[in-house]
Each structure stands twice: as structure tokens, then as C-alpha cells.
Amino acid sequence: MSPERLFRLLADHTRLRCLSLLRAEQSLCVCELTHALDLSQPKISRHLAMLREGGLVMDERRGQWVHYQLAGDLPDWVRAIIDASVEAQRQSGQIGRDSLRLKAMVGRPSPDLCADDH
Image (cartoon, rainbow, N blue to C red):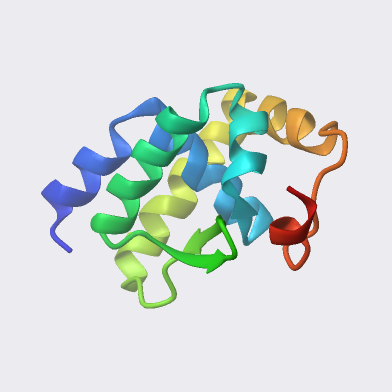
């Protein structure tokens, strides 16, 4: 991972919001990110695909649903930048607003039941 590639990935507001929620929640289904960010599923999926291709997140398919989490093998310097970015999102209030929407999600699936609930 080069710094240039990392900063290109972090430069998009939607991708940064996704990473912030994934950092805070550990693992989320696409449906949860769609609800929390109040954006369409295709838009969220496109940004998650870019993050996955860039090596920042990994996915796990459960039936037809996909759960995402931060990649486990990120270098320390990348984690430090993600952590600093999450903190900036927290200070701006954005992650708080996204987290509130996520917590208010009616019928929010648990990670191990997401595939069965939809």
C-alpha cells in the first residue's frame, strides 16, 4: 500500500464514512451501511468494492449478503491514518450522526443472522 493510493481512497467522503463506521462497529452488512449513510445500495457497494480492491477492507459472503470489516493485515501506519481520520469524523459530528442512524435501524440484523433475515 502506497501513501498515494491510501489518500486517494480516503479522499472520498462516502468511503471515509464507511471506514469510520467499520472501525467503530468492527463488522457491518451492506444493508446496515446503506441505512446508516442514507445512500443507495449500488453507491455503497461501489465504494466498498474500491476499498476492498485497495486492500483496506475485506468481505465475507453469508448467503446473498456481504459483511465488511477492516482488513486484518493493514500496516501500522495505515491503521494510524485511518484512526486519525475516524477521530476527525468524530470531532466533526459525522460519525455520530451516522452511528445514530445505524442504531435507529428497525430490524437491524445481527452479523450472524443477516443472511437469514433478508
